[in-house]
Image (tube, rainbow, N blue to C red; front, side):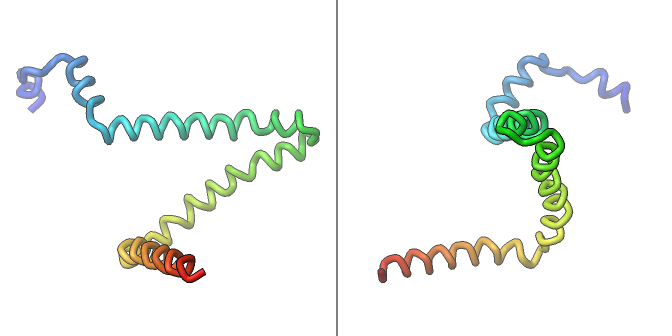
Length: 109
């Protein structure tokens, strides 16, 4: 099988990269990944220093800087458990229904 694959004619790597990069979902995914990386870098590596320059002690700043990490761990544990197949369709419907109720309520006022 590997021998057959090595005989296949392949387009140049640069051409494949450009074809992939022209896909809008891939560009959006890359942009989101870069933004999440920068946000995480700021929280993980700089929040402690920023809190210290604002007057907190080193130990207390470390505790405060660890809160986003703890929330992320809890979210990674509990959010998938709440995403049950029977709730995936209902939640967007409930959201639209609640938004329409809020808009109707604001029209009354």
